[in-house]
Length: 382
Image 1 (cartoon, rainbow, N blue to C red):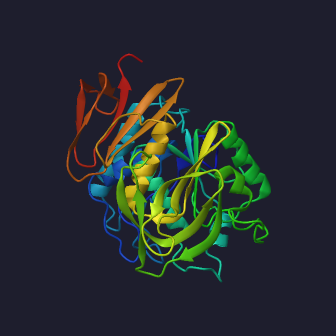
Image 2 (cartoon, helix red, strand yellow; image 1 turned 30 degrees about the vertical axis):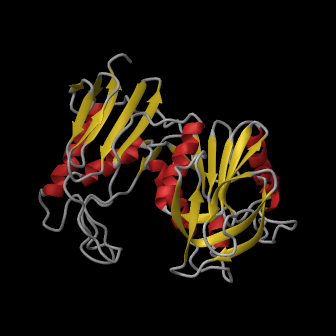
Image 3 (tube, helix red, strand yellow; image 1 turned 180 degrees about the vertical axis):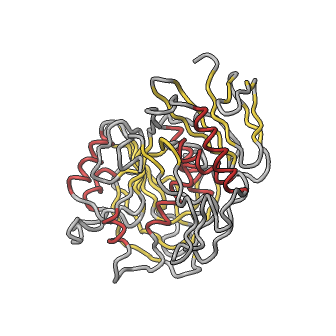
C-alpha cells in the first residue's frame, strides 16, 4: 500500500484480532502476536490499526472469523489485548503521524506481469511470480532493509537499488527508464524470464532480455526449465560479491552469453557447466546484475546483502535474525521500531542510549525484548 501511494502514509483498515476463517487451517494468534503485527503495519507506514470485525457475525460465511467481541458477548483475552493496544496507541499521541519510511531500495511488482508470467501455455508450470518476488523481498527483510514495492512504470528517482524478479512483460519506455537509472549511477537486479514480451504479449525480437540487453550486457541463447525435483549447482569463486561456495538452484537455468558483463558465478552441472549463472555489468555510472536461475535462499541472502552494502544502504540497527527493524522519520523525529518475531526473548545491541516510547524505559547499550515484544526507540539526543 505504501508503494502504491509512493511513500505516503496509509491505513490498515482490516486485520483479524484472533483468527481468520477462510484458510484451510485457521489457528489463533498467540498472545502478543496481534500487537506485534499491528506495530509491524504502523512501522511500515500505517497511521493506525483497525480491525475486522467488532462483533462476531452470528451466521453466514464470516460466522467463525475472529472479532473483538465474540459470540459469548463479554470480555475475553482477545478483547483485553485489543483494548491494551488502543491504550498504547492513545499514549503515543500524534508524534508518528506524517512520518515516513524512507526506502532507498525498490522491488518491482506488476499485476499485468503476474498474469503474463503464469499465462498458459508456458515453458514451466513451476514458475510462481508471487513466490519469486516474495523470496527476493524476504532476502532483503532478513537484512532489515527498507523496501518500497513499486510498479515498473513508477519513477525510479530517489532509489539506489531496484530489483525486478521475473520481469517477463516489459515496455520499451519502462526499459528505457531502467537503462537511464543504471547509467546515472543506480544498481539494477533482475532474473531469468525477464525482457521476454512487450505489453501486447509479443516476443521481443533480437534476443532476450529484449530492451534490457544493453543494460545487462548479456543475451540469453537458450532457456532450460528444469523438471520438478531436478536441480543444478551455482559455483561462486573467490573474489566476487558472493562467499566462495557451491549453492543449490532449481526450476530454471538460462544459457547466458556475455556482451560486456562479467560472470560472478557459474553453473556446476549439465552441458552448460562453467557458463554464467549470475552476471555483473558496469553500465555508465551504475551496475546491473542478472540472476539466470532460481537460487537457494542462502545464496539469495548473500547476494542481495552484498549488493545493498555496495550501494551504501544500511539497516537502522544490526539485530539478530528474526528481529525486524524499521525506521520512520519526519519533522517530529526519527523512530526505530524493533519487532521480535521469536517465541522467546531476544537482546539487541544499541549504538547509543535510547528511550522506548511504549514503556518509557531508557536503554543503555542494549535492549531485551520479550517473546513477540515491541519497542519504539528514540535517541535521547534527538
